[in-house]
Length: 440
Image (cartoon, rainbow, N blue to C red; front, top):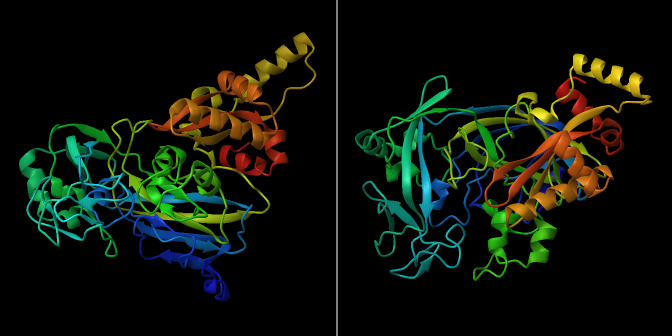
């Protein structure tokens, strides 16, 4: 049963998160807090993806923050998360496209790494030297690498955290000598920094920084690896040979789709997440310095950073997955609110052709996840239809003429973004968030 002793403590207006999970989201583990309804959560996050991926003792792909109990949040509610600030603190990071060498895992390299020499699952390890054989098993000294970088890069950032530049091999290897410093690993982090691998296959490439959170959401209602809290990665849990295996029905029931990798989940956005455990269990991590839609290499520039959130409980709001109100500039062109000039032209058309009323609309973005992209689109369309009490056919039409299907992550995270009737958003308690976000 969940430990709810924290509910006896007075809710805090502002809570500073200390500590990380071991890459598992466990609803029975004690949460931090509580933070009051309307309060602020501040955290220093650790890099996701590559660091945990090369740290075999960790049991998932991301080292996320310990979940926070939100005052008054109960299963069947929603929680509104306003992202007030995201700031990159890493000086450098490394990344690349991966492969999984045979023999280094029990079914899933993200969840159950093993040492093939001594057959230890989740072995404790240490770093010796630089490169892709630098992580060694404490028990037998064998190199343990559930993942290798096929083609990768080391990138450093300017002092304004606006631009990055990939580095040559000699500099990457020098940085590996002070990997924890350059990656700005938080003190409580247990991961080996990916800077120890020192990849340098494409030096001299300039990149823009546009930080966002790959992980932001609420605790699932059963224990699962954090990177698998979405239906695409979660599909690897179905029938898995390790202890975190789930059935497809259990995955659908318990997940909350907190692992989105949607680049619009950045400072200024508003996210509405489902609540499936008492207190919601707000967690975050996997900050990315920047990423194109789809995260098509499988990974991007994972960094440490500071995050400030403000949370608000939305009572009796049993949504199946997250709903997002992106920044205006992040909306696809067809889903942006109409200007005064456009509205005046539409009014003239209405008068000319006898249209009695022009509906008021506002942008909304509904997340869909599934094992594959086509199924994820269907999931997003179905969720949007259920949310707004309209047919899937109508959502398809509105997303076609006034929106877009946007890819969060390959293989199966999307968001259906479109102009929805404001009256429908009001009916489900979301209209005022749209008005706030888009100054309607």
